Length: 340
Image (cartoon, rainbow, N blue to C red; front, side):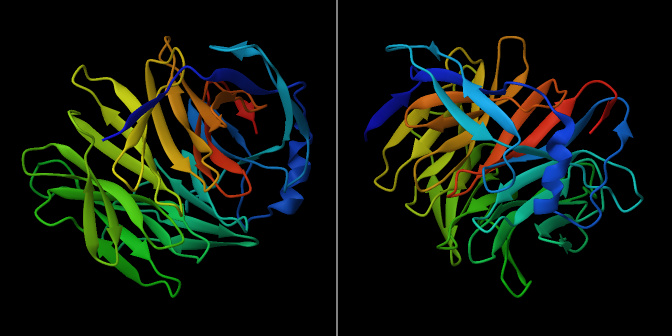
Protein backbone atom coordinates (compact mmCIF):
# COMPACT_ATOMS: atom_id res chain seq x y z
CA UNK A 1 0.00 0.00 0.00
CA UNK A 2 1.40 3.40 -1.02
CA UNK A 3 1.38 6.20 1.55
CA UNK A 4 2.20 9.81 0.70
CA UNK A 5 2.29 12.94 2.83
CA UNK A 6 1.05 16.45 2.11
CA UNK A 7 2.22 18.60 4.99
CA UNK A 8 5.20 20.73 4.02
CA UNK A 9 3.72 22.56 1.06
CA UNK A 10 3.55 26.30 0.65
CA UNK A 11 1.25 28.06 3.11
CA UNK A 12 -0.50 31.23 2.01
CA UNK A 13 -3.51 33.32 2.98
CA UNK A 14 -6.64 34.33 1.13
CA UNK A 15 -7.46 37.59 2.85
CA UNK A 16 -9.06 40.92 1.89
CA UNK A 17 -7.05 44.03 1.07
CA UNK A 18 -9.90 46.17 2.34
CA UNK A 19 -13.14 45.37 4.13
CA UNK A 20 -16.30 46.77 2.57
CA UNK A 21 -20.00 46.66 3.29
CA UNK A 22 -20.70 46.52 -0.42
CA UNK A 23 -20.97 42.72 -0.23
CA UNK A 24 -24.72 43.28 0.13
CA UNK A 25 -24.80 44.11 -3.58
CA UNK A 26 -23.89 40.52 -4.34
CA UNK A 27 -27.27 39.36 -3.10
CA UNK A 28 -28.74 40.27 -6.47
CA UNK A 29 -26.87 37.26 -7.85
CA UNK A 30 -27.87 34.83 -5.11
CA UNK A 31 -31.29 36.08 -4.05
CA UNK A 32 -32.78 33.42 -1.78
CA UNK A 33 -36.25 33.54 -0.27
CA UNK A 34 -36.36 34.39 3.43
CA UNK A 35 -32.71 35.40 3.80
CA UNK A 36 -32.50 37.52 6.92
CA UNK A 37 -29.84 40.01 7.96
CA UNK A 38 -30.00 41.23 11.55
CA UNK A 39 -27.96 42.03 14.61
CA UNK A 40 -27.26 38.91 16.64
CA UNK A 41 -25.75 39.16 20.11
CA UNK A 42 -23.54 36.52 21.66
CA UNK A 43 -21.86 33.85 19.56
CA UNK A 44 -23.31 32.65 16.29
CA UNK A 45 -22.21 31.07 13.04
CA UNK A 46 -22.89 32.49 9.60
CA UNK A 47 -22.39 30.87 6.23
CA UNK A 48 -20.45 32.29 3.32
CA UNK A 49 -20.04 31.71 -0.39
CA UNK A 50 -16.99 32.49 -2.49
CA UNK A 51 -16.46 32.44 -6.22
CA UNK A 52 -15.96 34.74 -9.18
CA UNK A 53 -19.33 33.74 -10.61
CA UNK A 54 -21.17 36.02 -8.17
CA UNK A 55 -19.83 39.59 -8.01
CA UNK A 56 -16.17 40.51 -7.58
CA UNK A 57 -16.15 42.67 -4.45
CA UNK A 58 -13.01 41.98 -2.46
CA UNK A 59 -9.54 41.76 -3.95
CA UNK A 60 -7.68 39.03 -2.08
CA UNK A 61 -3.96 38.43 -1.95
CA UNK A 62 -1.94 35.42 -0.88
CA UNK A 63 0.95 36.30 1.39
CA UNK A 64 4.30 34.62 0.94
CA UNK A 65 4.61 32.33 3.94
CA UNK A 66 6.19 29.29 2.35
CA UNK A 67 6.80 26.46 4.77
CA UNK A 68 9.21 24.75 2.38
CA UNK A 69 10.70 25.70 -0.94
CA UNK A 70 11.21 29.19 -2.38
CA UNK A 71 8.94 32.01 -1.33
CA UNK A 72 6.40 33.23 -3.83
CA UNK A 73 3.12 35.09 -3.88
CA UNK A 74 -0.06 34.94 -5.85
CA UNK A 75 -3.19 37.06 -6.00
CA UNK A 76 -6.76 36.00 -6.64
CA UNK A 77 -10.11 37.73 -6.73
CA UNK A 78 -12.63 36.20 -4.38
CA UNK A 79 -16.02 37.64 -3.54
CA UNK A 80 -17.72 36.72 -0.30
CA UNK A 81 -21.45 36.75 0.38
CA UNK A 82 -22.70 36.44 3.96
CA UNK A 83 -26.03 34.68 4.41
CA UNK A 84 -28.20 34.17 7.47
CA UNK A 85 -31.08 31.71 7.17
CA UNK A 86 -33.84 32.19 9.77
CA UNK A 87 -35.49 29.38 11.68
CA UNK A 88 -39.28 29.01 11.22
CA UNK A 89 -39.87 31.19 14.31
CA UNK A 90 -37.96 34.02 12.67
CA UNK A 91 -34.85 33.79 14.81
CA UNK A 92 -31.43 33.56 13.20
CA UNK A 93 -29.79 30.37 14.37
CA UNK A 94 -26.46 28.70 13.69
CA UNK A 95 -26.36 28.31 9.91
CA UNK A 96 -24.07 26.14 7.85
CA UNK A 97 -23.60 26.07 4.09
CA UNK A 98 -22.49 22.52 3.41
CA UNK A 99 -22.03 22.15 -0.35
CA UNK A 100 -22.45 23.84 -3.72
CA UNK A 101 -23.26 22.31 -7.11
CA UNK A 102 -21.72 23.57 -10.33
CA UNK A 103 -24.97 25.42 -11.16
CA UNK A 104 -24.84 27.31 -7.87
CA UNK A 105 -27.45 25.30 -5.95
CA UNK A 106 -26.59 25.39 -2.23
CA UNK A 107 -27.23 23.16 0.76
CA UNK A 108 -27.90 24.66 4.17
CA UNK A 109 -29.01 23.44 7.56
CA UNK A 110 -29.69 25.05 10.93
CA UNK A 111 -27.30 23.28 13.23
CA UNK A 112 -28.88 24.60 16.44
CA UNK A 113 -32.54 24.42 15.52
CA UNK A 114 -34.09 21.04 16.43
CA UNK A 115 -37.06 19.79 14.45
CA UNK A 116 -36.32 22.06 11.51
CA UNK A 117 -35.39 20.75 8.07
CA UNK A 118 -32.29 21.24 6.04
CA UNK A 119 -32.69 23.30 2.89
CA UNK A 120 -31.82 23.20 -0.77
CA UNK A 121 -31.26 26.85 -1.72
CA UNK A 122 -32.15 27.02 -5.39
CA UNK A 123 -32.16 30.45 -7.00
CA UNK A 124 -35.26 32.21 -5.67
CA UNK A 125 -36.61 29.50 -3.38
CA UNK A 126 -35.81 27.26 -0.45
CA UNK A 127 -36.77 23.60 -0.65
CA UNK A 128 -37.00 21.84 2.75
CA UNK A 129 -35.27 18.50 3.26
CA UNK A 130 -36.35 16.54 6.33
CA UNK A 131 -36.33 12.96 7.54
CA UNK A 132 -39.59 11.95 9.20
CA UNK A 133 -39.40 11.90 13.03
CA UNK A 134 -35.78 13.13 13.00
CA UNK A 135 -34.56 15.72 15.48
CA UNK A 136 -32.01 17.05 12.99
CA UNK A 137 -31.72 16.63 9.23
CA UNK A 138 -28.28 17.54 7.92
CA UNK A 139 -27.88 17.56 4.12
CA UNK A 140 -24.15 17.50 3.41
CA UNK A 141 -23.69 16.88 -0.30
CA UNK A 142 -25.28 17.73 -3.64
CA UNK A 143 -24.21 16.46 -7.06
CA UNK A 144 -24.84 17.81 -10.55
CA UNK A 145 -27.76 15.41 -11.01
CA UNK A 146 -29.66 17.14 -8.22
CA UNK A 147 -29.24 14.24 -5.78
CA UNK A 148 -28.56 15.09 -2.14
CA UNK A 149 -26.88 13.07 0.61
CA UNK A 150 -26.88 13.62 4.34
CA UNK A 151 -27.68 12.33 7.80
CA UNK A 152 -30.88 11.98 9.85
CA UNK A 153 -30.32 12.24 13.63
CA UNK A 154 -32.96 10.89 16.00
CA UNK A 155 -33.64 11.51 19.66
CA UNK A 156 -32.72 8.75 22.03
CA UNK A 157 -35.67 7.03 23.68
CA UNK A 158 -33.67 4.83 26.03
CA UNK A 159 -31.23 7.25 27.60
CA UNK A 160 -28.40 6.22 25.28
CA UNK A 161 -26.76 8.44 22.70
CA UNK A 162 -28.77 9.62 19.71
CA UNK A 163 -28.90 7.38 16.66
CA UNK A 164 -28.46 8.32 13.02
CA UNK A 165 -28.87 6.98 9.52
CA UNK A 166 -27.67 8.27 6.20
CA UNK A 167 -29.86 9.16 3.26
CA UNK A 168 -29.76 9.76 -0.48
CA UNK A 169 -32.46 12.12 -1.74
CA UNK A 170 -33.32 11.34 -5.35
CA UNK A 171 -34.29 13.93 -7.95
CA UNK A 172 -37.99 13.19 -7.38
CA UNK A 173 -37.65 13.89 -3.64
CA UNK A 174 -37.76 10.27 -2.46
CA UNK A 175 -35.31 9.29 0.28
CA UNK A 176 -33.18 6.15 0.15
CA UNK A 177 -31.86 5.39 3.63
CA UNK A 178 -28.29 4.23 4.17
CA UNK A 179 -27.58 1.92 7.11
CA UNK A 180 -24.39 -0.10 7.35
CA UNK A 181 -25.29 -3.72 8.29
CA UNK A 182 -24.91 -4.37 12.02
CA UNK A 183 -23.84 -0.80 12.81
CA UNK A 184 -25.07 1.15 15.84
CA UNK A 185 -25.35 4.31 13.73
CA UNK A 186 -24.53 5.43 10.19
CA UNK A 187 -23.68 8.94 8.99
CA UNK A 188 -23.60 9.96 5.32
CA UNK A 189 -21.81 13.00 3.98
CA UNK A 190 -21.04 13.97 0.40
CA UNK A 191 -21.54 12.24 -2.94
CA UNK A 192 -20.32 12.45 -6.52
CA UNK A 193 -22.08 12.49 -9.89
CA UNK A 194 -21.97 8.68 -9.94
CA UNK A 195 -24.26 8.62 -6.86
CA UNK A 196 -21.44 7.23 -4.72
CA UNK A 197 -21.91 8.38 -1.12
CA UNK A 198 -19.21 8.50 1.55
CA UNK A 199 -19.61 8.52 5.31
CA UNK A 200 -18.82 6.52 8.40
CA UNK A 201 -20.50 4.12 10.78
CA UNK A 202 -20.08 3.10 14.38
CA UNK A 203 -19.66 -0.62 15.00
CA UNK A 204 -20.85 -2.58 18.03
CA UNK A 205 -17.49 -2.05 19.78
CA UNK A 206 -17.89 1.75 19.39
CA UNK A 207 -15.14 2.18 16.81
CA UNK A 208 -15.74 4.31 13.73
CA UNK A 209 -15.09 3.11 10.17
CA UNK A 210 -15.44 4.80 6.81
CA UNK A 211 -17.40 3.55 3.83
CA UNK A 212 -18.35 4.20 0.22
CA UNK A 213 -21.97 3.36 -0.62
CA UNK A 214 -23.14 2.79 -4.19
CA UNK A 215 -26.57 1.49 -5.15
CA UNK A 216 -26.97 -0.40 -1.89
CA UNK A 217 -23.45 -1.87 -1.81
CA UNK A 218 -20.94 -0.84 0.90
CA UNK A 219 -17.17 -0.74 0.66
CA UNK A 220 -15.32 -0.14 3.93
CA UNK A 221 -12.56 2.46 4.08
CA UNK A 222 -10.11 1.84 6.92
CA UNK A 223 -6.65 3.34 6.89
CA UNK A 224 -4.09 0.85 8.28
CA UNK A 225 -2.96 1.09 11.91
CA UNK A 226 -5.28 4.03 12.59
CA UNK A 227 -7.90 4.26 15.30
CA UNK A 228 -10.94 5.86 13.65
CA UNK A 229 -11.70 7.03 10.11
CA UNK A 230 -14.13 9.76 8.99
CA UNK A 231 -14.58 10.10 5.18
CA UNK A 232 -16.42 13.31 4.27
CA UNK A 233 -16.05 14.02 0.54
CA UNK A 234 -15.63 12.21 -2.79
CA UNK A 235 -15.03 13.39 -6.35
CA UNK A 236 -15.94 11.78 -9.66
CA UNK A 237 -12.55 10.05 -9.84
CA UNK A 238 -13.30 8.15 -6.63
CA UNK A 239 -10.82 10.14 -4.54
CA UNK A 240 -12.09 10.35 -0.96
CA UNK A 241 -11.09 12.96 1.62
CA UNK A 242 -11.68 13.03 5.34
CA UNK A 243 -9.84 12.81 8.63
CA UNK A 244 -8.66 10.10 10.99
CA UNK A 245 -7.66 9.91 14.64
CA UNK A 246 -4.28 8.41 15.41
CA UNK A 247 -3.28 6.47 18.52
CA UNK A 248 -2.39 9.74 20.26
CA UNK A 249 -5.86 11.16 19.74
CA UNK A 250 -4.84 13.68 17.07
CA UNK A 251 -6.83 14.37 13.89
CA UNK A 252 -5.09 14.27 10.52
CA UNK A 253 -6.47 14.61 7.02
CA UNK A 254 -6.22 12.06 4.22
CA UNK A 255 -6.95 11.41 0.56
CA UNK A 256 -7.89 7.81 -0.21
CA UNK A 257 -7.44 6.62 -3.81
CA UNK A 258 -9.35 3.87 -5.67
CA UNK A 259 -6.27 1.60 -5.69
CA UNK A 260 -6.24 1.58 -1.89
CA UNK A 261 -3.30 3.97 -1.44
CA UNK A 262 -3.68 7.22 0.44
CA UNK A 263 -1.98 10.51 1.25
CA UNK A 264 -1.80 12.27 4.60
CA UNK A 265 -2.90 15.93 4.71
CA UNK A 266 -1.60 18.08 7.56
CA UNK A 267 -1.85 21.86 7.43
CA UNK A 268 1.61 23.20 8.38
CA UNK A 269 1.84 23.91 12.09
CA UNK A 270 -1.77 22.91 12.80
CA UNK A 271 -2.86 20.92 15.84
CA UNK A 272 -5.53 19.12 13.76
CA UNK A 273 -6.62 19.02 10.12
CA UNK A 274 -10.14 18.22 8.85
CA UNK A 275 -10.55 17.98 5.04
CA UNK A 276 -14.21 18.01 3.99
CA UNK A 277 -14.48 18.06 0.18
CA UNK A 278 -12.50 17.56 -3.04
CA UNK A 279 -13.28 18.41 -6.67
CA UNK A 280 -12.11 16.67 -9.83
CA UNK A 281 -9.09 18.98 -10.10
CA UNK A 282 -7.86 17.70 -6.74
CA UNK A 283 -8.60 20.95 -4.90
CA UNK A 284 -9.35 20.17 -1.25
CA UNK A 285 -11.14 22.34 1.32
CA UNK A 286 -11.62 21.91 5.03
CA UNK A 287 -10.57 23.33 8.37
CA UNK A 288 -7.58 23.22 10.68
CA UNK A 289 -7.09 24.01 14.35
CA UNK A 290 -4.21 26.29 15.29
CA UNK A 291 -2.12 26.31 18.47
CA UNK A 292 -4.65 28.61 20.17
CA UNK A 293 -7.48 26.19 19.45
CA UNK A 294 -9.14 28.38 16.79
CA UNK A 295 -10.47 26.77 13.60
CA UNK A 296 -9.69 28.28 10.19
CA UNK A 297 -10.79 27.25 6.72
CA UNK A 298 -8.22 26.13 4.19
CA UNK A 299 -7.86 25.43 0.50
CA UNK A 300 -5.24 22.95 -0.75
CA UNK A 301 -4.55 23.66 -4.42
CA UNK A 302 -1.61 22.46 -6.46
CA UNK A 303 0.24 21.37 -3.33
CA UNK A 304 -0.13 24.83 -1.74
CA UNK A 305 -2.14 25.59 1.38
CA UNK A 306 -4.25 28.75 1.62
CA UNK A 307 -6.03 30.01 4.72
CA UNK A 308 -9.54 31.23 3.91
CA UNK A 309 -10.12 34.57 5.66
CA UNK A 310 -13.55 36.15 5.18
CA UNK A 311 -13.89 39.97 5.10
CA UNK A 312 -16.43 40.00 7.94
CA UNK A 313 -15.95 40.21 11.74
CA UNK A 314 -15.15 36.68 12.83
CA UNK A 315 -13.15 34.56 15.21
CA UNK A 316 -13.21 31.34 13.19
CA UNK A 317 -13.98 30.03 9.72
CA UNK A 318 -14.55 26.62 8.21
CA UNK A 319 -14.61 25.75 4.51
CA UNK A 320 -17.10 22.96 3.83
CA UNK A 321 -17.65 22.39 0.11
CA UNK A 322 -16.08 23.16 -3.25
CA UNK A 323 -17.45 22.67 -6.77
CA UNK A 324 -15.75 22.19 -10.11
CA UNK A 325 -15.65 25.97 -10.68
CA UNK A 326 -13.61 26.41 -7.51
CA UNK A 327 -16.44 28.12 -5.62
CA UNK A 328 -16.25 27.46 -1.88
CA UNK A 329 -18.98 27.45 0.77
CA UNK A 330 -18.72 27.24 4.53
CA UNK A 331 -19.39 29.12 7.73
CA UNK A 332 -17.73 31.64 10.02
CA UNK A 333 -18.27 32.53 13.65
CA UNK A 334 -18.81 36.00 15.07
CA UNK A 335 -17.87 36.69 18.68
CA UNK A 336 -19.24 40.24 18.91
CA UNK A 337 -22.50 41.99 18.07
CA UNK A 338 -22.38 42.51 14.34
CA UNK A 339 -24.76 43.64 11.63
CA UNK A 340 -24.13 41.20 8.77
